[in-house]
Image (cartoon, rainbow, N blue to C red; front, side, top):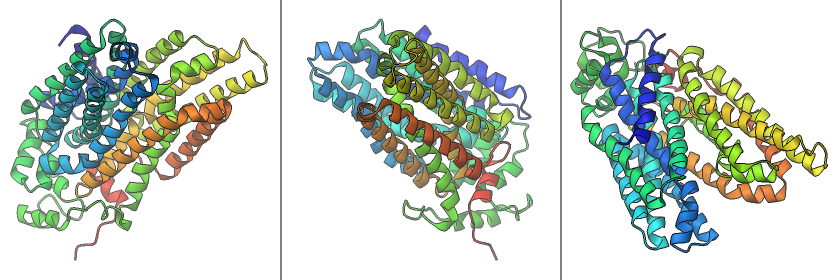
Length: 484
């Protein structure tokens, strides 16, 4: 892997060390290695998202594509992601977390190769669709895997590395693509895919998944490996299987195996039961509000927003990259120190303010007032939005989604929430230009209002999961039948 490709992984190693400084749990080398291997998939996710911008002119010139044809190339990624998301939970449940990540990288490698060697538009579309399928699977399995292997006081920061590596993937692909041919850029995209694929053999499978499929001895062995050979994992091993605190640590293997087996696998339809209502409301609500707050409209069309506001597109785009990565890193560091809720509330408030400032900028333009000031106001608004979103709303909904669902519905719930995410992403991406044509002021005021609604939703419904085991979180949210 070249220098630019290894930089994010070296940075992540240093960041993981800083997260651990104030934590009571001491991470083992295998825990850090497993996390870094997992988030190399997140980098692939980001590089796929970031590819279409720097490659646009080269692909359109070399293959004689029109704007409409290239728009199909860009948008088919989201369609593929929806397809991948629908099967993500089932694949991760039946094949395991490691094999699911490996399968996703096979999709991504085939996708990158189809793009790199394409001679006609159809091969571009097929490659982009395959990339999307891999992304849809990765967007579910990476945060879930990290949440399941990490101690409770490190879980938030480690899981949030997923979002940071997506940012790195987008940013570095954009920067590298400014200097390289689009075919070479696609071939470079296969490098982190191969890195994860070849590294999966050396990391531990999720102890919670192993317990779910009845491999209890392997589950405890994997947990011991992740926590260190001298760590006492007996209590955590039992809690993984038995969600109810009525069972003491002295409960024997036979008894808690029977209790575990009573928790039957829920289908997608079975997910919509009263006992899972709160978890489903929180998980879906956060994802829907995250997307309808305008993130993909702003991210995908930032250049046109700056031009419409009368500001330099190059300066604005560079400023966004400069703000995004350090704010995401700050969110990762603070996740297990301040907790999820404070970061979410600050982040949602910032996105609300940012959209309001952009709306105000366009409103001033319509009134032909403060013409020198309004472009700067638009830039400030977009940067406030981008920085605030990166701090919490970008990554924390995925962290919480990986924490709140019980193991027997995690697959179906994860598939459903991830599918909703990509559907909402497509709706906003598709509708944004039409909304801007209708009213730029109205579009951003609407986004600001939705971000305001997000603040209320978080304050009223979202639980604090900092410092609690996954089982404690799930028992507090979901209703379980009483054992008699």
